[in-house]
Amino acid sequence: MGFNLGYIINKFLPVQVTGNKLKDAVVMHNGSTSSGVGTAIQLDGEGSLLLAVKGSFTAELLVSGQGPDGSWHSLSARKMDDGQVLRKLVSVGLYDVDVRGLSAVRVYISSISSGSVSVYGRVHAIEPYPIDNQYLLKRLTDGEIRFSTREHIYQGSTLSTGQRKITSNTSASQLGTSTTVYKSITIKANESNQGNVVVGGGSSLTNSTGFTLPPGSSTTIIGDFSPSKIWLNAEVVNDGITWMGVL
Image 1: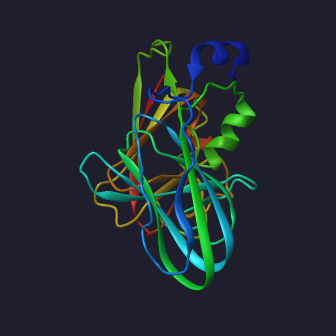
Image 2: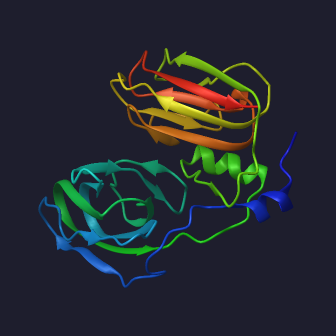
Image 3: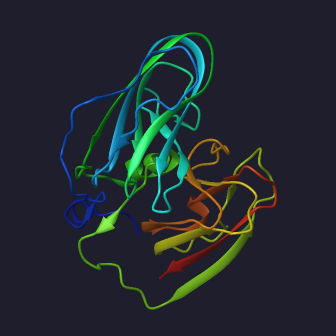
C-alpha cells in the first residue's frame, strides 16, 4: 500500500490551533553579553515559534517552554537552512520550534565566552500544507511529524503490540523487521528510561536528531508504515519503547 496524495491532502492537516495567526516579533535578547533567560513570550494557543539568532559570539542557547505543570522544559529547535534538529543553539540563523500546548517560551543563554547575541521571536498558528510519502518520511527524520485528523478515517479491527530495547546509542535500529503495513503506529518511551529516545525515518538517525521522546511520552504515526520503515536511537543504551499498531 502507498499514500494516496489527494486523499491525504483532503483528510489530513497539521494540528490546527487557536489564537492570533501572526504576532509581532519580540526581542528576547538584545546584544546580551552574559548568561540569562531574557524575555519570555507568553502564548495564547499558538503552535509554532520562529527564532532569529543574530550577533557574533561563542555561546550556547537553550530553548525551553512552560508546560501545564508550570515548570520549564527543554525544547528542540529545527535550523531552517539545513533541517538539523538541535537542543543547543550555537550559531546565527533562523530556527523553528514547536510550542503547541505551552503557556510561555524563552531562550536561556546558558554560557557565553565572547561577543554578544540577540534573539528575536515570533509565534504563529500552524497552517495546513499538502504532503506526500517522501516528504512525510523526511519530516519524520527531521523531527517534525505532527498530524491530526478531521474525521476518524483509519478504523482498524486488529491491534499488534511489541517492545524494543535499544542496545546501541551510536547507530540506529529498526522498530522491527516486519514489513506488515499498519494504518497507525503508536510508540511510547518507557517511563523508566534514563534518557530520550529518538524516532526517525532512516538508518542515518542519531540520538541528537529526529523526533525526541522523553521518558513516558509517546507519538502516533498515521499512514501506511511498517515497523521496518521506522528507526530508533537513544541517548542511553538499553532504554526501550513499547509500540502498538492498528491493522
